[in-house]
Image 1 (cartoon, rainbow, N blue to C red):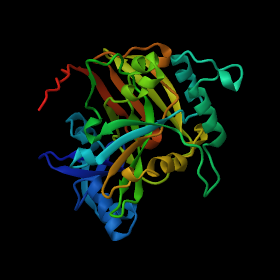
Image 2 (image 1 turned 60 degrees about the vertical axis):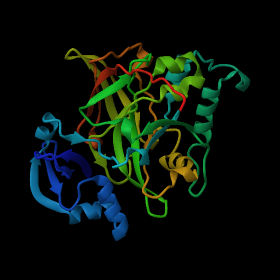
Image 3 (image 1 turned 30 degrees about the vertical axis):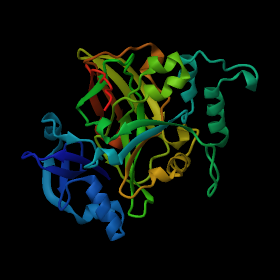
Image 4 (image 1 turned 180 degrees about the vertical axis):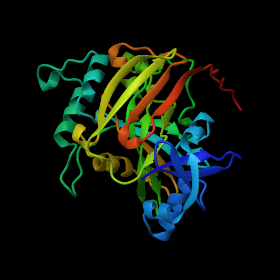
Length: 331
């Protein structure tokens, strides 16, 4: 089952179930997936069961919603400060290759000659998939921002003018909601574009934190249930109506050095991430970047990320945001 959030023709928020590439059915009694998930928690039922209870006969044209710019991200919060966007890196088999080249790292020789990136990747390969009931090695972790950085599908991705690069990262994101006791519950999964500044990161690995403070996009559809173990997708950049770059990407646990459960455990082990009512969007990493092929995206380019299991593709246009850095004044 896949869900979307959208605006109706009269501007009201709504939630729909994807019936096909052309059709969705609107839900009754809810105007957001956040509210729907809260209702499921209060009723002690699954999200899918709640959806079936609130399914209406209202059939809508999916393509028309897209063309009229009425798609919303598949999760949000009325107060964006209560939505945390973060992620993990070096989690996919082969994900160290581009990073190693980015930092001109030495992958040969003794353990002492390896950089921290390659050491961490090896740690994940050796200990990122623990036995049931055990906790594996912790992954690389980064913070991206709050709910205000999430762009809706088909909307512009705004890269700040001070950025040195704005490169796509095709990923899967886990979507979570903490209950009234602060316990996290996974709502589902969505396609994501975890936009990053790879040129800044390449200058020095300690700039990774800066490079991740960029907007991102997720959706358009929220996949309920477990994540398939093997996901095959395509990431592309379209410039002036023509495909500039295109490459397949793989995700799912068969293609990862960590389990989803291990990544979740190392995120939610922190008490600050277990506050009641908090929403989390967590990117699980990638091994495919156009930056690794020497591509430099520019304003006006369109990113497209798709995988069949997630339905419609995630598409966004890159736009440079002429941001003025504010001056700090004494009070």
